[in-house]
Image (cartoon, rainbow, N blue to C red):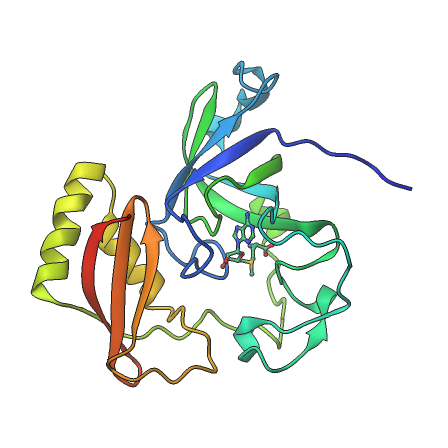
Length: 231
Ligand code: SAM
């Protein structure tokens, strides 16, 4: 038996590629985006009342990780990418039906769009449904998860003078908390756990319309090298 679903909107996100997106929502409060609703949900009626809610659940499609053949086991990056685990024990992107869920902060409600932050969503992500976060039901005191027991350990993020200046300039142009966004995302160390980078090795990811490049001058430390317009 099959069912079909269709998006109620699409996200315009600060994240233009999968690399360096936090692994869960709320880990980078400066990660912002806009959920653009599509017809017939873009009239205002469908979001009426939502201004009374601080956070919403977004159900979405991992549209850049869809696969024909279902995987039963996955290798979560959180476990270093070398330990496999039942797909239903994880939040892996490669999963049956490719459905993701994230609690995000609702900053502003307009008839055609929702302004959201604390997101872990790629630009263009199709949204299937929106539900209000219900604190008394969704926050479970005493809940445990021994596989993912705590948020990632943060590492220090340093800046070259040049990169800091570039980031401040682009933050003003974009009207976005860009310095905070870069620091919050890089502090989670997006590098695959199995890689031991030399100080010469550079990494990069696109945030908004910018290429951000960084390296690891010493183990457990990141230094931002440049923040330049993406090519
Ligand atoms: N919070 C969601 C959940 O639990 O279902 C997502 C968790 S998943 C581990 C988070 C990762 O999904 C991000 O780090 C990003 O690389 C990836 N991602 C986000 N949006 C995506 C999309 N539309 N298609 C494919 N991968 C995506």
